[in-house]
Length: 358
Image (cartoon, rainbow, N blue to C red):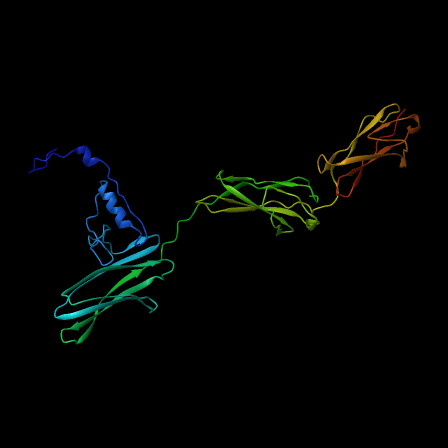
């Protein structure tokens, strides 16, 4: 393609090639200008309108930052302003600048001064950071003091510069973490002092959340109980246990769920399934008692006492009973006592058998 009136050929592919914008962000006096210049050496095109030199610019070559009216960086508004005055027949000058806050407070920005000159040119900027600086109208004020050749002094108020600081927009709403299956405590139906209870943290969406846990006794946090397992102590006796589980993930609103409460913490062995007989109630047969399910698991030890029509069978031992002719016509019961270290024993009886047949 050839442009009208020119012999320079334009590369269509170059024209359609996407362009990249490099945005340099940083706080005031953090080196953004120097970094921008380095990027220009690497091939990036500098902004068309650059900030002019100022007393703070030691090299005198100016800045490589664009000249904005206002710039927002990390919640801070930078307000650049320029003082450019022509003075004649003077023997020195000084310039005071200050900012008037919306509430009427004056803040001194500093004092600049110099010898006899016919020109004063300066550039500066102010930074206002939310939420420290309240929204409203701010005014930059300046006062120029000069000394004439005859030593007379003059003071001139410069035209004010006003700007508006608005409240920052609210942050975007974050998505919420959703619980899809409640956390739960596993272990004994009624917790026992000294025996561990474990926590299942449940299911959450998204699935890659992190979770933290806090065990509670009687609704009050248990100091130091932040993990997936907890052994009730005597201080927990008679109280229900729950666990408060919080799921978190960067970029999401955390979610908290609490397990259903357990039964009160006990100091007694528990039976969750009553003992029962295995065998036939018939003379010559043997009845065997199955102990059922006890808590704590794998810890409880058993003792057996056998009864016929309510009378203790003195020579019966263990979990088996030989049915002799003397037991014909009686009904058999076995009382099973479970015991575990540190806990109060518990006695549970079987159901009564049918009458022993011949």
